[in-house]
Length: 224
Length: 363
Image 1: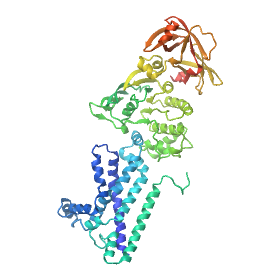
Image 2: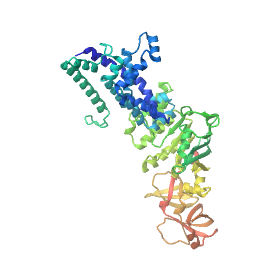
Image 3: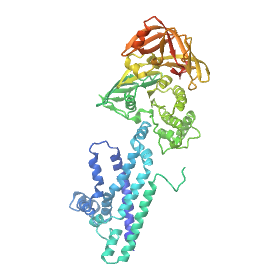
Image 4: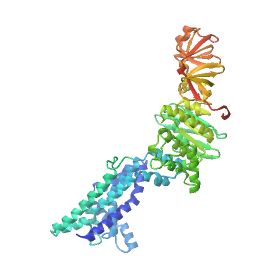
């Protein structure tokens, strides 16, 4: 098995999930609480990676961060090398690719919080930010963990975006799914099967954890 | 506190209310009205949770809202204590955590002391580490109130404070709330549509109908002398008199009002000082009336005035105390009622309601 690819994939998925916590929570807060009438425009953009072919998304990201775009030029000037075909570029693409998997569970958890509780918190002197950290976040733990885990799991298996933006560089951008593709291309079916099984098992276990956590009734735990 | 606010809800309601909340000495103002009359919206405007279209809200020298000058104080800076109808307790916090929630600006030691103090005042010791879901309705109500008063609010806003409780608990908690409001001496605004609550809790009462303040006065004044037919319809009770319970036997109380003895059902322990309340439509008029009937109260009196209210006629009586009756026009004709005429007014004991009245020295 290609342990370098496995290690890289886990590193990428973890950093993507953490980045999405930082970026996704404010976006989800806005999506859930904004009363702006054109809100649906932004909601649709956030959901776009769900339906867009990864190659299309990857293509646009590649163009957007490439050396011919203003963003790409700025990055090259600041860091000294271009963003595509690096780990950072891959991380940026993964964050965009998994955005809905984080934002949607976050936002639907926030939607569940009774607005009167939030108003009560304000009347008790808690600012909007304090209300978020003291009331809304503790009440949304299950949704936040779900979003974190789903974006982690989704990043584990990404293929098209990685190929477009990251390429296939051993130890830098070659993730597990690309490794499997390479093995099959080399007709090494046994190697591909082992890695594929690992990915299948990991994905199943993660989803198992998510669904178990979101269960309302705990049959195996005693009722308190 | 001066409140002049207007807010338009197209097609539903136009709110246009102006009233005062007495702050020095602090008083309890009742906003009384049917559902949909705009009283909860008024309360939300006071709390800063809703913004009026026009008008102003001033508290002492502070301006909380001024539509023309663009002043909008946030709920956070108004330092109010709010209690909503369904209490809105924080499910992730314990009882003590709920009470401490508004005290985060205090140093930990003082915060702890204040939480202890409020828990003791509200008799919440022993359940301080429970979560709201484990509490009874009455306990939840006390926690919500404890949380609201913990940070020493300048104004207390209570929206239907007792409506989520079942009837027996409500009667008990009403008494507790009455004592607490007097003890705290914080200017308070209480929204209700229950006349028992209004009489028991209020110093002043504003009747709200169709988004407007129709009448302001003490609850007793408003109930006894509604200024027009609309207020009379909203308050639904025409006689509320100070009385004293003489004795209670087998759930039947004997009450004295201005030297006249009445019988009433004692549904709860109301204490010796009460308001005796009678709805005008529960008063039956007749002549002579010495015959035995099921009505426990038969009062001899005199017709003072007769005024028309559409299909019905309101008859003002003097039975040793003022009493109002509402009868049909044909009844007036059959009985040949006219001012000065002697009549007998009968009421069943169940039609005479007793509401606890504040002790004389507290008034």
